[in-house]
Structures are given as structure tokens and as C-alpha cells.
Image (cartoon, rainbow, N blue to C red; front, side):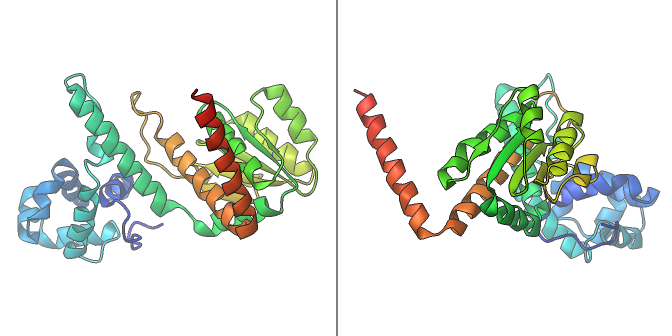
Amino acid sequence: MNSEDPLPFGRNILEAVRIRYPGLRKSDRKVADVLLENPQRLMNATVAETAELAGVSQPTVIRFCSAIGCEGFQDLKIRLAQSLALGTPATHSAITDEDTPEEVASKIFDYTLSSLDWARHALDMEQVNAAVDLIVEASHIEFFGFGASAIVAQDLQQKFPLFGIPCNATMDSHQQLMAAMMMRPGSVAVAISNTGGTQTIIELARLARDQGARVIAITGASQTTLVDYSDVVVNVETLDNTDLFTPTTSRIAALTVADILSTLVARRLGQAHNQRLVRMKRFLSHMRRNEAF
């Protein structure tokens, strides 16, 4: 996306400014600094007041709006109001030693909400639907992931047996290698890596594809080697944050996408299959009540 391309409506404008900041002109950065420092102040400011706050001309303010993908100053304010409705933006959510426990909790909630909203608007539903197509027709699925991505793999492995699709999510690296080597045409490998750069995951995707399997990548990075070995790429883009205290946002977003995939697969299988699921869940509920005694 070029700096002056229109933004999809609903995308968090504060995060868009932060990401596009390095490519802005020096004078445009002055407006960006004012916006990021005190977004609430700009909500009620005019073009003239914004120009005065930033120490630039009014035409520069208008040019800044265009540079970040808005259709004018009023469009910027609409986007800003929408972003602030989500809570404190991620650019303001860094946890400090001075924060109270209540402030820490608030910042983590705000950051997670902002990041999930970003992931929602970045999600390519064409690729999601393509992934569902492969899964529905799969004779067998292997879910591959390490670290936090292994948790996502296990969550998917827990869901998909409900759909009558044989699947596995082994955590042992040797077992993963053997599983990838034994895949065949008709089977599907789901390679999960937030960075897209985990070498073992890339190798597993390559091996699975070499055996004739189709590969679905679930990743937060669209320009990685993993993409080169994938037939479908479900990009789960979250806000870039290396803060030690907020490491689970990408996992939450990936788990949400896992729910989206499993729900779409369930819908594709039809009413008869879903009725079997309902009966199974009723049986499990009955068992839990009996176990309580």
C-alpha cells in the first residue's frame, strides 16, 4: 500500500500513522507527532489550530491527511474518533514502572482490543475461504507450530476431529519431521508461525509440499520464505510490539482466526453433520453433570 492509498474504513488511523511515519516528509511528521502525542486534542481542533500546534502551514496539514490515506481533514477526524472508541491506542500502551495495577490492566486490554481490530481489517477473506476449501476436501491434516504457535496448532487439532477430518498436532520435532515426510496428495499441512521465519516450520512446509500435500500458512508476516512454500496464506497481522509484558496478542489473534476457520468449515459441512455435533455436545454435557457427583 502506497502512503497516499486510501485506508480501508475502520482501520486504526493511529496505527496507520505510526507505521507510515518513517516515509513521511519532515513537515508531515510534525503533524504526525502532534496527532500521536495527543489524539484527543485534535478531535476538536480546526485545520488552523492543528497547523499552529504542529508549527506548520495549513496546506501541510491537508497534505498530511492525504499522505496517510485520508480524504481530507474531516475524514481524518472521523477515523480518529473511531480509533479512540477502541480505547487507548497501542502507541500509548507501553507499560511503565510507574503504572498502577489498574493502569497495567487497562493498557493490556486496550492494546489487545486495538490489535485485534487491526487484525480483523487486515484479514484477507479470499485466502480464508481458500483455506476452508482445502480443509473441507482434505483426507488428513497436520498442524505444525512451535512455542506460542504450538498452542494454536493444538487448539486447531482439538477442533477439527469434530468435523470427521483425521488430524494431528504433534509437538515433538522428530515426529513432526516424520509426519511431514509421510504426507501425500490430498492431505493438508497447516504451518503456523507468527514471524513466518521459524526455519523448522519453513522446512516442514517444504517437505510436506514435496510429498504432494497442500500447505496453508497462518502467519503474521506476508513477506517471508514460509509464504514461498504455501498454497494459501492466512495473514494474521497484529500490531508490532516487542514489549516484554504484551507477548500474547498475536496468539489471541491466531486463536480467533482458528475459530473463524472451524466455524466456516462447520457451516460448509451442512445441517446433518451439525446435528451430530449437537448430539455429541449434549452427551458430553450429560457426562460432566454425572462427573460432578
